[in-house]
Length: 85
Image: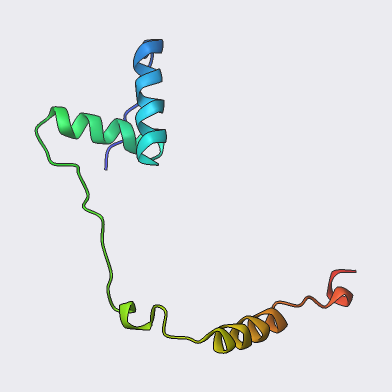
């Protein structure tokens, strides 16, 4: 891909780019690319990808099972202070 440097962007345009990037959770570079692609007539909207492969597991644990899992997970996250001396 070609790299192009754009200089002297008017402050109001730079502000719009930053706002769009923040709103859509994009980098400023990605926001500029999307704007250019849209203006050129290309589709830039990326549909959200939904996954349903774990739906049947949601809410399947009892409170006891969830507590046991949390306890085991917590035990795995302990840090050996001797390794950080």
